[in-house]
Image (cartoon, rainbow, N blue to C red; front, side, top):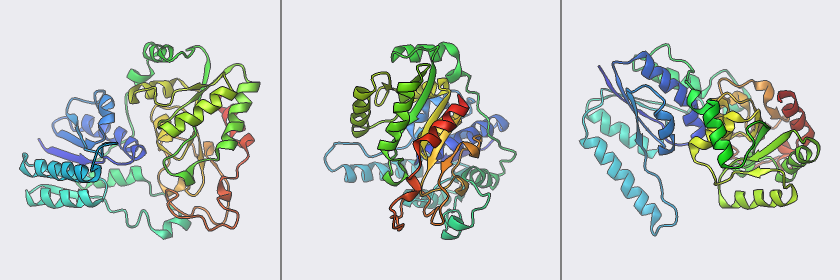
Length: 346
């Protein structure tokens, strides 16, 4: 029986890609014990996994506290010390490569653990921006775990807890939604501005369904105070829509998304969340591209919306400033294209 540590805590969407693999891993190797260092908001999902897998909560910067950077650094080093003094892990898979991960690698290797750490140098190379291949983050996770002698892993998860009609109805009713209606989730925001579809264009999508489709209920998803303010503005103009920004727990949002007929999202966490629960997602891509390896495994690429330009993809996450004379032309996409995609799905 092996004691195995798996590390992946940043980028919610990237963790969501990993979760079904972890579920498969725990089921196929029931004699091993798996500990996953990850975001604590996934604790509810881990309760739906086999009993031989557990979540170890990662520490994060706390908002609105004095010296938050120094406090965060202290807690990170404190966490490293805990791993140094804890019992040895037989195997360790580190699925990201930041400073903390390099330090953790050194500590656990020194303790005698068999450590394998992901290398993103080829995956995130400039060459792949133009010469896209079939390498995906999902395949990279599988490959790293195979180095620890874990094989035949796949994309599987029992979602019945989230998709059960009783739970869906209870969560929908708690926020004033009709469980018998046709729900369309719209997640119009992104942490990276370059990846965000222009809000005035997204408003045209909202306006269409508010004014022309009485059979449809629009639900605005996301989080953040600025995002809430924008959604409240839309609510004033289109009273029929429902904003759930900052109103749901993570697990409640999963159930809401699972009850939607489709979700409109950026290349962001909500795209992965919708794909995770099997809800078709119309994703909008600008600087990035679905073929760069971050597209959900079980989602059809034909649902993606993107403008074919010689200059794109230009970056993996929109981290590189646009050099097109027509700034961010990649996001100059007619709202009707998105509406047509959604109508085909509902």
